[in-house]
Structures are given as C-alpha cells and as structure tokens.
Length: 137
Image 1: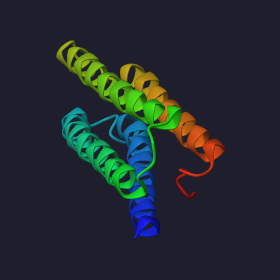
Image 2: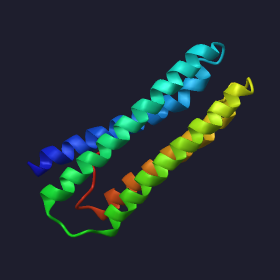
Image 3: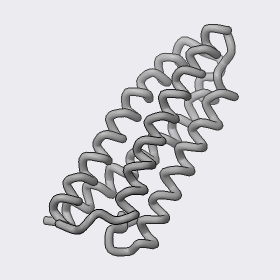
C-alpha cells in the first residue's frame, strides 16, 4: 500500500515538473498570438495550482501511511510548497501588469518558471539524498 502511494506521489511530481516545462514554453510558442498566449497561461495557472495541491495531498497521505516522525526533508517539502505558491502568485501578477502595458510577458515569465523548476528539482534531489522517503525517478 505504501509503495502504491509512493508511486502516485511520484507520478504527481513528474506531472508537476512537466507542467513547469510547458509553462516555460508557452510564451515562446504563442509569441505572435497574444490572446491565445493569455488563455494558455491562465489555464496553466489553474493546472499549476491543481497539480501542486495533488502533490501536497499525496505527500500527506504518504506521511500518514508511513507513520514516521516529522523530518527535515518534510519541512523542506512544506517550505518549497509555500515558496512555489508565492512564486506563482508573483509571476501571475507580473504577467498581468506586462499584458496591461502591451508587452509579451516572455521576459517576465521565464525567470519565475526557472525559479520554480529549480526549487522543485532541488527538493527532489534532497529527497533522493535522504533515501528512505525518496520519490522514485
């Protein structure tokens, strides 16, 4: 049962990372069509929130199933969850300001998405180093 929960958590983390890479590509894919880019970016905001919540939920289920004491790795995951949420809110506000000024938003979006990818990758690497709670890659 624990292996199955770990598998679901791993799948959610992989889907979340895939969405982050899609978020990185959206501004350049729809560079000429600003209306489609805005629609796709707004859809990605909702998907980001949904997948981040799914990752957190599957992580909480794993914590309850494994019956392990709280660790620094889990604290790091909670901190990364909060930082990812704040980074996405800042990115969405800055993109909205850029769109209202008539800019494309590429220079605004890329740094924030790269920060989100880096935070997620560092947390995956830290969990892999911790060993017992690692998400299988």
